[in-house]
Length: 133
Image (tube, rainbow, N blue to C red; front, side):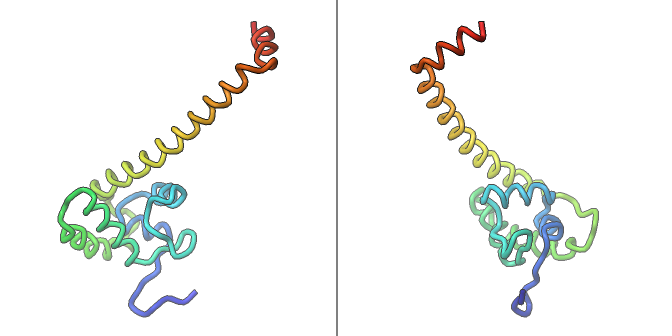
């Protein structure tokens, strides 16, 4: 894989430290398709991470300059093993994951309810109710 000069490519561990979140949370954001856009699974460009961080700040109606300041500070953290977590990015990504989880949970609830309605009007439901008693 070739990258353009001046654009660094980070793996999931480095990208998580760059954003100030845990690698597991970054993986969950990738699975839920609500996080930064990966170049390939587990590989992120720093400009995509910067765009994602700026979007989080814009959604919260906070100044983008703060996101840029944190991005500059995060460049020095990508090599450190014990980099501190960013409280704002942690909170904002938790909100995104909860939105995705509620969407999936709601769809699963609707699907289970439809199955219960269909099964309640079949002879199988009468057999199951007599067996379970």
